[in-house]
Image (cartoon, rainbow, N blue to C red; front, side, top):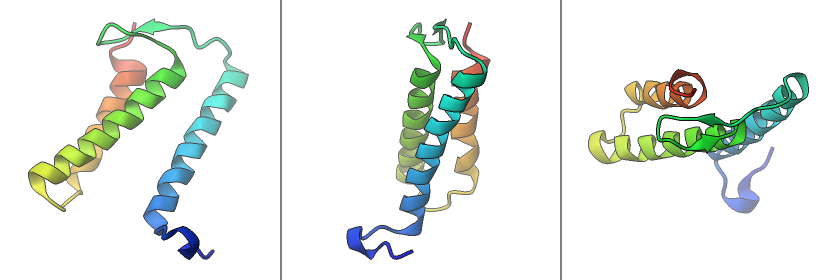
Length: 95
């Protein structure tokens, strides 16, 4: 596939594909387990599944930018931090 029309790189395309797949996964999840009731999270926000996904994506992005600002290019260790934050958004700290 030629992505030169918008100067996209494969990592950029992969990110957008991953975002689209996560939104589609939320849709499938809603079909099989309807409801998605609001829950009170760690920062005292009433959130739905979609809200928690959005917060997890934002947290992952800001964690990545913070890691690049503090440590530079080695991203190997950085991949675990957003996953822990995403887990906390969806399961760990929500009631």
